[in-house]
Image (tube, rainbow, N blue to C red; front, side):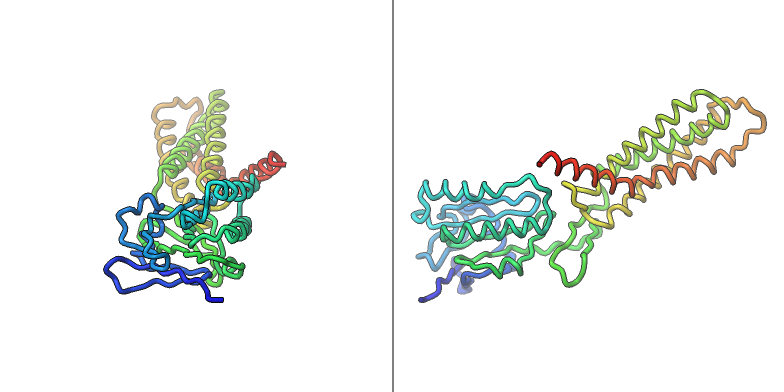
Length: 322
């Protein structure tokens, strides 16, 4: 039996793109730009499906399948091959794969395999897959599945800019961590909470040494912002329970340290020049040293405490699902 071949070709171009019923990694920028768009946005495209009587790339019936925090499939069918009833059946089968379970690279790989298994029964022309989310699907393992249509995996190579960091788990793995920006609004909040927390600790330390009752109130303020900082760090480092990038935790410590420095300086000068001292020969050097040590230990610990908070959140979510 003669194998089906998908042939794509641009108008006024001799170059042909040929695909069998396998997984293909697409790196051609021009081809990616056409294939990543839904059919209805491709009416001006010069790309045709040569193997289907020069069918225009937009003149297909298309189903979009989203994989949460992973990417999406655009599955293209010849219009006559998928009537309304079959289309409803396809959507119902795909919808049955939805789960409230915590997502991982492994769970999303298994879901991708199930999608392929379902699509095999409906004989699409081809499917494009864009894995642009947090969770990465091991394409090598997908290619080992039985395929009755080509899967065109769109790979956009990220530009290496000075404004992003990336970290790869290991050279042999296809799993990669997402990059993160050097500056984000979340980082400002982390800096602000560290600043207010250290300010509260600094002024509380002064009033404790000064034997004033207001030290209790200031200590509560410092503790409150410490707790808020832990929550902010957890939110910045994790997304749906998964660590965005292992380097991000340490990078955010720089913002905490900057916030501590500003908070300590502000707390020191306000304490020295605005608060009255009730004891003679107040030791400002000792006061400053204690404030710095307590602030650094308390506020930097949020980088580690965020692991525990995330773990508790994940376990709570699992219990809710059950």
